[in-house]
Image 1 (cartoon, rainbow, N blue to C red):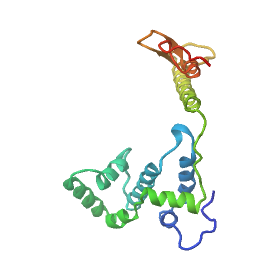
Image 2: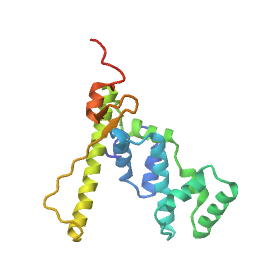
Image 3: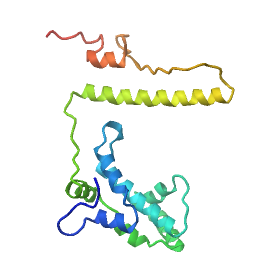
Image 4: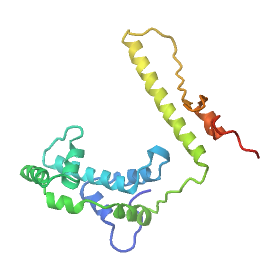
Length: 207
C-alpha cells in the first residue's frame, strides 16, 4: 500500500521521518515484513529497531561515513542498548565529531507503538493470525526451511562442478528431516511424525 493515502489530522511521525530521511520505500517493506508468514515475519519491536537502524545508517552516510558490515548494528546497540555510560559517551562523541546530530537522531528513534500506529491506522494493515492447527503451520515452516537448504546445497554443488572439483550430471537435491525418539527408539520422517502426533512411547488414542 502506498503512503500517499488520506489521513486525518497530523501525519504520523513515521511518515515524516520517511520523507526527511529519503526512505519512502521503507514503508512498504515495514508492512510486508509485519504481515509475512512464519519465520519471515518481524514483530513490531523488531521493526522499530530495524527502522531506527535505517535512520542511523542514513545519518552516518550523509556525513560521509561508510559503515562496515555490522557496524550500524553495533553503533545502534551502543547508543540504545544496555552498555556502560563510558562506551555510550565515546560513541556519541565520535559521531558528533563526524558531524552527526546525535541528540536529534535519538529523538527520531521510534518505539514499537509508533510503528503499530503507522501500520494499522495510517496504512490500514492487519496481521491475520493463523487459526489452523499448530502442527499444520509448523509443517509448512519446516517445508520452507528444507526448500531453502536444498537451494543452498544445489548452489554449492554447481560451484564445485563449475570449478572442476566435482563431476556430476544434472543433480537433484532432496532434503530429509528425520526425528529419533531416544526413549522408544522410533524414527520418523518429520511430516509423518507431525501427522501421527506422537511417537511409539504414546500409543494412538482410541477415536
